[in-house]
Length: 279
Image 1 (spheres, rainbow, N blue to C red):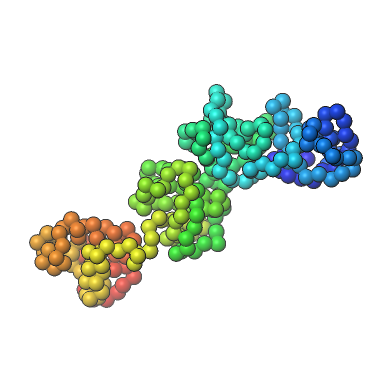
Image 2 (tube, rainbow, N blue to C red; image 1 turned 45 degrees about the horizontal axis):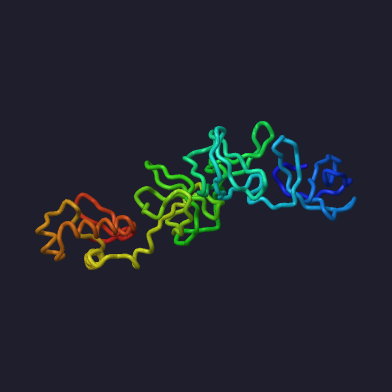
């Protein structure tokens, strides 16, 4: 009998309480009342096993929204003294204990959780999914993916569950207002770390978002073997004379190129990434 999973069991007998089901080891579980309608002895039935309000093993033909070991978004329905309860598609709501909550839970909102069996043998939910997300996804640099924002850390950025399965992250410097807890977002893979995690960004490919002033800088870099002797400390008058733009516009354009990793800034100027040549 496998708690938290769907399995095929055999009807041993029918009584006033429902159908008594057994597994290959003759362990029994009750399929209550109306769910047993139409069944007869020796029938095979697919059921999900969980515990009822009195902590007894019970079977149901209903399909839950999550199974043991899975990671899925579930909607919170209420907060109580022992934790939050989530709608997982069964009559008895699923407990999300306070000790398993990484963020404040608000009824009506969805949260990414993992279904686990606690020390007392009960099924419960946890928002602590980081260690259970898989690495080494099929995605590579440049791919677009969909991910669920399950936690935001102001120091590091947003933690993302790609396909609710793979470990990903948006660095804090790449975040925008669309990156919010509980939201599914479309992101680009900008790197795959050595341990298989995905570094993600909502920024579109640079050539589609480059501002006119940034294009001026790229053109100047191209014409000067990938290097120009200007940076954010350059004199405003020199910038105006060379590029016909203000210091503020120059810094905005440079910031965009740096964010898209098209250039690096040095003490004596700006250099295109992956470009070699004379100054």
